[in-house]
Amino acid sequence: MTEIEAIIGLETHIQLNTRSKIFCSCKADSWEDPPNTNICPVCTGLPGVLPVLNRTVVEKAVLLAGAMHAESIQSVSYFARKNYFYPDLPKGYQISQYDEPLARGGFMEIPMPDGTVRRVTIHKLHIEEDAGKTVRAEGRRLIDFNRCGVPLIEMVTGPDLRSAEEAAQYLMRLRQLLRWLEISEADMEKGQLRCDANVSIRPVGDETLNPKTEIKNVNSIDAVRQAIQTEIERQTREVAAGKRIEAWTLEWDEDKGSLYKMRSKETEADYRYFREPDLLPILVDSDWREAVLRTMTELPLDRRARFVAEYDLPGYDAEILTEERSLSEYFEATLGLRPGEAKTVSNWMMNDVLRSLRDRGLTASRLRMRPEDLAQIIGMVDDKQITTNTGKELLEKVEATGIAPIELVAAEGLAKVSDDAQLRNLAEEILNSSQDQVEAYRAGKTTLIGWFVGQVMRKTGGKADPQRTRAILEELLAG
Ligand SMILES: [Zn+2]
Image 1 (spheres, rainbow, N blue to C red):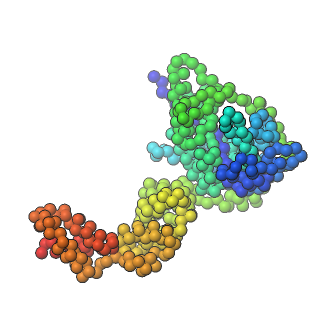
Image 2: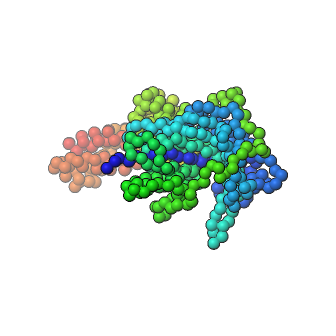
């Protein structure tokens, strides 16, 4: 049987996190607001109004184009009207960009779980406004205009992805990048990152592009993976049965886990594009472009590579520490105070700080415990002033109270008990009250040492120095 490969291209819509909409001063994020509360004559398309472009939208788009290594960020680009009729599109057209988009060309390199890197080309990147939302309720269609005029970036990839898993990896890296650049919250469940997938198949080695189908309305990365896989399998079955693939638009039904046909696809001619007469061209001169691009921080994959090279961290640690920008910054800030201890700091971050973040649903930038506090805790554990367990507990206490670790240790008497006389007293007490265990130990069941150490730990609230305790117990039990 001929081996089949899938050819996948993704079209993503990215909702920018600007405060106001793209052409008016209405609040852009309406996620928790009642319907039709963030609207005005401009975004609801009343006659006689004129749109005014939000400068921040252009800046965020230029930043993303830069991160995508765009071949050209156009000094002049234009808005166009995309005409179609839909109840939640009050103007009867969407203001978008068409023949002269803001940026062309570029690529994103996506590391795959098998260690290879897939270079995904970006065909074009443009700015547009969102349409409203139609909600079906009680047999009626209700329209919410809050989303009208919310700024979007549309980004189209080349047909460079070869499997459902690769498409999922692309979306994960894109989401990471958008959050890193602070241009979108990129939450697919909230529609802040939307993805349509174009899928076709061909025998491996073949260079032709066969008719493709477009999958719409997929709202999570898992759903994208499943929908594409389902479509690859359907096309493979059709071709094996001697049928031809037609250029359908498909919708993914998440509950049923199946695709159904929406309509035959519109062609671009159906949209009757023309230049938007109410807006001037977008002029991005080199000064402005350079000023925006100068604000670009080191990108996640570059930082990941640097953490491995500069701090000798395992790739796994570097990957986790750079999942989110403020986490990577937190790590470096802490490391700055504990130089040369990259792996130790990384362990504390990955085991304890991350758990605390996940429990609280926070990012590192919102932690109450500062890198100085973490460095102080690590320092006290290293210097054997406190036990590792006390250190872990301190982390939670600092986060809950905002009090510096050193002060908590003093105020709560958390310093490690390594005073031999005190430990010896405790150990004798425990041996005297555990005659059965002592006899068992002396009869050869030496694994009981752990139990004895545990008893001393309990008595000291985990503050006993475990090595000293063990040595003292062994000496007493031998006697
Ligand atoms: Zn408005």
